[in-house]
Length: 225
Ligand code: NHR
Ligand code: GAR
Image (cartoon, rainbow, N blue to C red):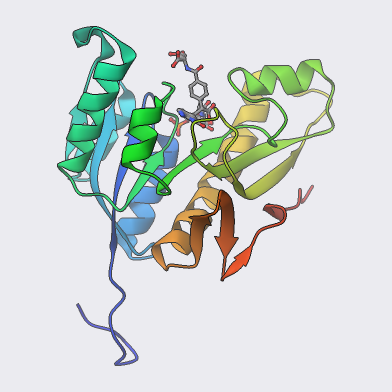
């Protein structure tokens, strides 16, 4: 690898991305990695659903893809064990959940302790779990958004890293609102992964640290319009 300033070239961090569906976050990350904008190497994209559209998009970028169906396993613990073994075969230093729709058991979390990130479509701690856009609309919130957090055993409860706010419009539907939130997801997820890859972001003592300081609150990208 060459470096423009003659300094040491930046090592690329090996990552594996887990998806269940469309994979727009996965694509945003993979495209930035391919262009050199993100210092990561996407070693594999893995889905729990063989029919996930994102698998074909990843394959088109020459990224190795795998699917592992829970139906082939007796229980969650044995599925998660097989998933962890599959991931480990790619030796990732970071596991990126990008629309991965299965809760991960404590054993899986322990295997990749401190190196799993998730993007969640709400301003956590609001609206953990599913159907976040619908719930924000039903509550008539004027502000919604998305959050990147480290994954711990507590569902959608791990330390927050960065959030983007999105203003809710009076005529918003679930789909119009989620489309605007997703645009922000692609940008803040890339930012968080970039920090992690450059060694600027860590999980220590159950908190997120950025540039050697514990984050008292997530970095916030304010709504623009
Ligand atoms: N696992 C752990 N341990 N901790 C987290 O914070 C996790 C996690 C796995 C996934 C993503 C999360 C989200 O961003 C995530 C965070 C799935 C469900 C869920 O209820 C909830 C939250 C998230 C992902 N899944 C159902 C299940 O029984 C299945 C739902 C379905 O298949 O449609 O696994 O929102
Ligand atoms: C994203 O909006 C992500 O925040 C959300 O699913 C979408 C996946 O889109 N994640 C969850 O709801 C996790 N439970 P994508 O497949 O196009 O990246």
